[in-house]
Length: 193
Image (tube, rainbow, N blue to C red):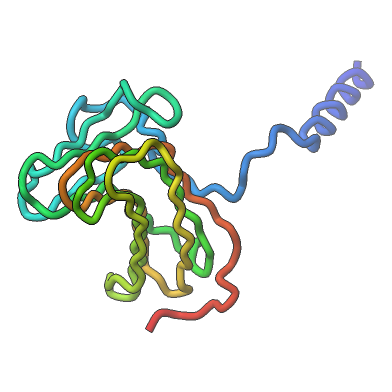
């Protein structure tokens, strides 16, 4: 019996060392990246924050079960009053990402975006919370789903960063399939001024 238990234990230990399905260790976890989580039928998606310029009712944010790039849902954003912008974002505070080079990717579909447009954005906050880096990739007019990516560095003394989508001006945008990847080190380890 002892020999049988020893053999079983050896098999279990050997199995623990065997590689299983590899998770992409380069991915950084976002909350509800595909907008699939259940939540209120209108308003911001669970795990995301929505904010608009001045009038909080100037843009409508709706989980859309009829249109998606992946899965069953997306988030539709549309301007309903004359205000300049709205953002949907996740604020990330993770000291282990300092000194990292990251890539934020978002599937974007636009309709009638006649202002500056809509698309992905990134903000990096330095000491004291000041914005020290801002990048965005916007699409105007009407366009079917496309993936938009922004690569950025998180300086060694950055306090936090935000990723998400922005709509500047009239129109509608659908967003889906958000992804944040760790793609290397900044190489410089430089600090923000």
